[in-house]
Figure: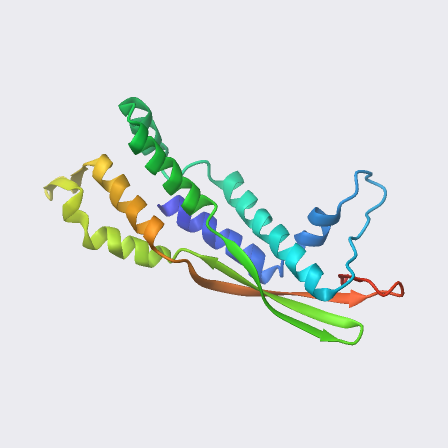
Length: 193
């Protein structure tokens, strides 16, 4: 879980503090290294909807690149067990946590030839998940050895508990980010440089 926390904080920092600056470059890069074609839109609302999709994919792509799994040791255990239900729950939990970001258009502000779009970024409240797993430790912790500071865990029950929580819990608002747009002489909207 620590790796997940650090990766998510890094991604959120990049998305919010960087004001998603990578989006125009990634979303609009032309095949040639010499020229970059900026995508243009007939309306600011169309631009906003398209960029929300791009931003979500970029954030989830970043998560996938930083993390292949939320816990490689559990991956090995699940592979050995050869239990289709357990494998599916673990894979789904991994996907829900690694590709957790939902990006939507929160507000579109158009003022003449200038505009800005505020995007809402949602994800799981990891503190609430940690608290839930901690409060329900008796459901998956099988043995506690305080002298060695060790615990034994029933991984099957842990996976099911985590999966049930994630599949039944709504994502929460994590952040907003604003991207500025401008209308060119061709009366089309594009990201402001």
